[in-house]
Length: 118
Image (cartoon, one colour):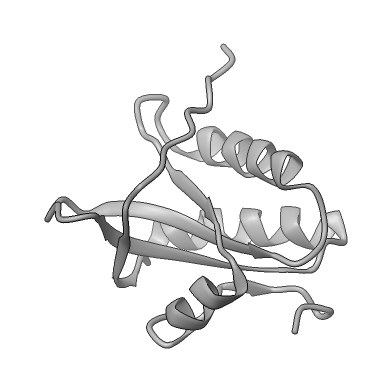
């Protein structure tokens, strides 16, 4: 079954903290192996976040991609996520600008950072 990717725009994102636990450690390892294999310059963060004025907690994978193809990265990360979690689960993947990442780095540390990413 092919999953459709839906593109959403959120007015703002508030990082609540890192999303971590045994299942998250497993997927972070897989995400890291995938990202390292691309050769792209990037960093990645798995966070708990609230969007806009909502108090609903969401899990988001934030990626600062300094080189490479965001569509390729999005597709690969999505496939890995769905190989670990139930089909009815979803993961929001967001690509960060440099200034957005500066704000994120004050709240959480990346679980992956390519050696070339500055």
